[in-house]
Length: 127
Image 1 (tube, rainbow, N blue to C red):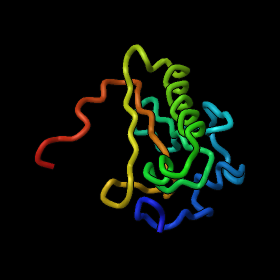
Image 2 (image 1 turned 45 degrees about the horizontal axis):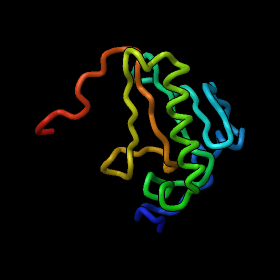
Image 3 (image 1 turned 120 degrees about the vertical axis):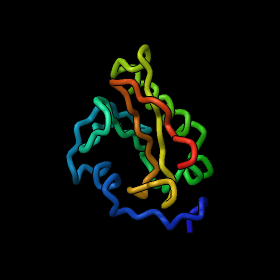
Image 4 (image 1 turned 90 degrees about the vertical axis):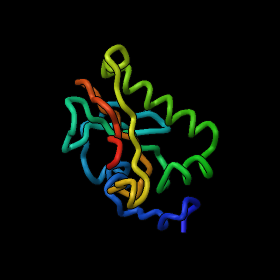
């Protein structure tokens, strides 16, 4: 089991394959710490995924095992993506799903950057 209690990292997951160049993506940003690309099924006018370059299942794995430099580099990449896409002034949302109850579909830590329209409340009461 991983640090977070999730299953071990699966190197065959789609994001690992994208990182290795086996599956193409529409890149927005890439540096030594992260790769950002447009989601193939966008939920908002702007919907970009940012994934760290490493084998991390969840935020707990990433923050427990990555170097401070890798963590800072990843979050700087997230901020650079939002700025490059013109989302800072109007606003945007960063979302990361963890585990089954959190709705995580790909077992590689990643964040979604949503924007391009008013997003409203994130979670409805009583749901």
